[in-house]
Length: 304
Image (cartoon, rainbow, N blue to C red; front, side, top):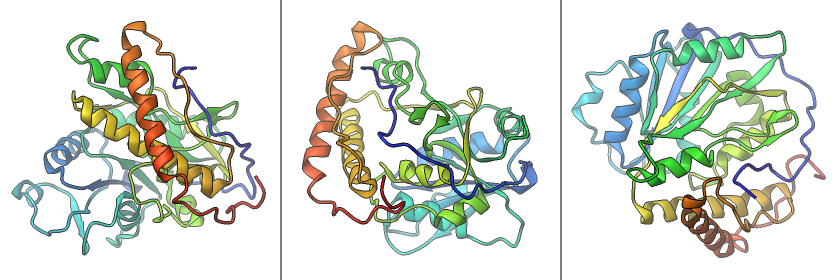
């Protein structure tokens, strides 16, 4: 298999929710940050330079301390502070619940280190308003900043294997990846937002995405691309996939799914197989270390 995958469950839409059309005046971009202020600056600067630009950019400080770099005070962003490191799910909820008194119809979620083209929100708005079908969320590709398979092998692998693409079924995305996803505010609050029992940056977006699919369609916008500069570091690569394996274990338990322990991956490019093997080993480690830690909670949707 390649990394193209889907969550092993059928997701039916119940009580469809009709979301408003997208307009930049009513969009809030939300970015959580934890020990990565330099990467946060990359994301914020790219959002500031988009045209059209979202009405609000909210940066959520998920660090232990309130000390922040000086560039934030010079930027047209709102900073949300709270006590302690609470994790990305809590941080994104805080960004969504933050009140400025303005009307916000859509939340755009992205991560630190993600760069957006100048026309990004034009692509988002075109995708969201492209037809009469109501959409509760819009998902787009996340690719690495790849020069070549030799000079930037990890970024090349993450791009070629579409690692940060959402799981798909015959009806489109089954969920969202929060490095690049817009979510209707009404749908977000109808689901209860991100489940803060997901403490890591893994699985929390998939779980929210499944809940969103219960409310309506998640639209796939192929032109709505975000570029993420992944570290060319094998230890960082392994840590990422250990985390993803742990997220799979928690998602499996929360949704009462068949085993989500990953097995063999065959890379699209044979020269990248070593990274596929590292990915599998790391995800299996994360899954095996965590599967017994997560209780089999009642499925939030009844029988799946």
